[in-house]
Length: 139
Figure: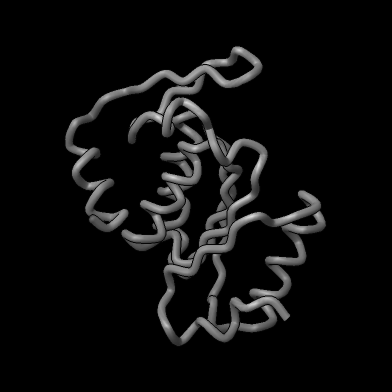
């Protein structure tokens, strides 16, 4: 089952799962409980290109549920901001940016800015499509 289909299946249930992280702080997630309550991406930084679309949004939410700080990039400001609001409302960390993944300079500037801010990127996910593949490979 695809991530988008999985999210749609869980979305209709409208349940809240409370997860305790290592500091004892509670985070409420609307989508699902973390796998084995492990928060396997805690402390990781994930960049999702195409985060305003259905697949990119579902992946970004999954990364957030598992504890990652998510950087969402997409061409449609309202879509990316909506997904970011959903993630932050659930208690996770997310940042939105309007980026065209076909623009090499914009992608390089965005990635460089994240590395400068966080020190590293652990995950890059491309939900844009085959035309953007060449832009998202590390140089």
